[in-house]
Image (cartoon, rainbow, N blue to C red; front, side, top):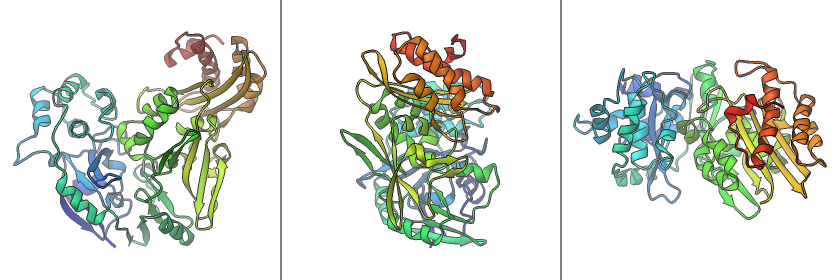
Length: 476
C-alpha cells in the first residue's frame, strides 16, 4: 500500500521506496528541489529544514512544524503535507520574507539560507514553536559565516504572513487516516494508525524497530549506515498522543512531541520548562517524542533523570494487555530496558510535585544550545522544619543508564538543609557512580560538577543566583 502525502498541495503516491530513505534525498534527487541542503546529516545544522503539516486534533486546520529533512524517513510523510523553500515563491518571485532576507544582506555564502528561511517562515505562519523568542526559533539553524544579526532582523521585520490552508485541510482529511505498508529489497515497513494495529504487528514482528520522530534512529542510518529489517512507523498511531492533566498528575502519551510537552512540563516546575527549552533545537523538539526519549534507553537522554526524580511511571502495552512500572526500574543496563517481546511504551505519568518541594534540574553541556548532556542532574527534596525528610536524586551521563543516587539520598535524609549537608551528599556521589571519561567530559569533571549541582541548589534556595556557567568555580 503506497504512502500518500501532499507536496505544495499536490498529492504524491509512492509505492516503491526505501523505508529508511530520507526526505532530504527524495527532495534533492527525485524532485530536483536542491534548495534544501545537506549539511550535517544528523539534525544539528538546520540547512535541510522543511515544513511538514498535519491535520490538527479537531481537523479544522493544518498544524505546521519545522523539521530536519535529513533524519526524516519517507514513510513518515504519509498523510501529511510538505513545504520546501521552493514552495514559497510565486511565479518565480520571492515571498516577502525571502525578499527581506535579500534586501537585508542576510545571506552570505548562502548555504544555510534556505533553512533559516523555512524556520522563519514557519514562525511567520504560526507553526509549532512560533510563540518562542526569535532566537529560540532559529537556534537549530547554524550560520557558519556568523551572519545572525541581519537574519534576526529579517525575522523581526516579517514576523507574520498569511497562510491559506483551506484546500489542504480537505485534501489531508482524505489520506490522514489511511495506513500504509510495503516491502523494499526484503525489508518490511508499516505505518499503522491504531494501537490495536500496532499490537498486532508487534505480535508478528516483536523485533521490529519502532520509529516515532527518528531523531535517534535517523542517525543509526545516516551515521551508522544501518539497514533496518522491519520498521514500524508509529508517529500517526491514534491514542499515543494523549495528554491528560489532573490535580494529581500529568499523563503524556508516548507520541507527544517535546515541543508540545514543553509548556505542560513548565507548568509543573520552571526548571522542567528550562530543561525542555534546551532539549536540542526546535526542529528536533518538533519531531522527537516523550516515549522515544525513554524507550531508546540512552544514558544521556535529558528527560529521564528529571522524570525519575519526580517519581514518574510508565504504562507498557502489548497485545496481552498493560502493565505499569516505575520509570527508574525501566532502565536495566546499557542498551537494555524492561520491555517484553511485543511491548511498547504507551504513556508516561508524572506526579505533580508538592508545592513546598525543593526542586532543581540542570543540564551541563559543552555548548549551551543544541548539545548532548555531559551531566544532567535532578533533585526533589522534602523539608520539615529545616530537616531533609525526603530526597529523590537522579542523574544522566554518570552511568550506563539514567538512575537514582541512593548514597547521595541517604546522605541528605535526616540531615539539616545546610551547606555542610550538601557538600557531604556531593561526596557520596562517588559511592553511587563511576562515570566514564569521553569527549564530553572526564570522570573527574562529571563527579565534581554533579556535586556542585547540590551546592548550587542550596545557594539558590538562599536567594543566591548561581549560573550553570559558574559551577566549575564552586569550591565544594
